[in-house]
View: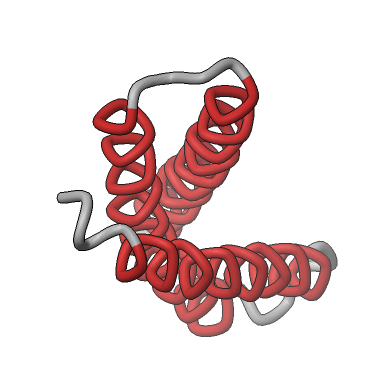
Length: 110
């Protein structure tokens, strides 16, 4: 049973890292597209892509933290993983709120 729980922590951790990097990529593409005059529909699509991937990242990040606390209380790297994941969740939540405000401001364009 210990093997399965270690596999679960590993898979959810890797998915969380992938989603965090994907949200950063979507944000970088939006910023770069603003400077390179992408069309409005492309920029709005990137904002919605960031919005949905960050929501999934935040949900999986919280579940990853819970699984780490429940499953591996004796792991020496657990505190570092929890801190890094919490920082990612905090940053992603802050940028999510900014994106939500930006999307709300762009509603007349939609």
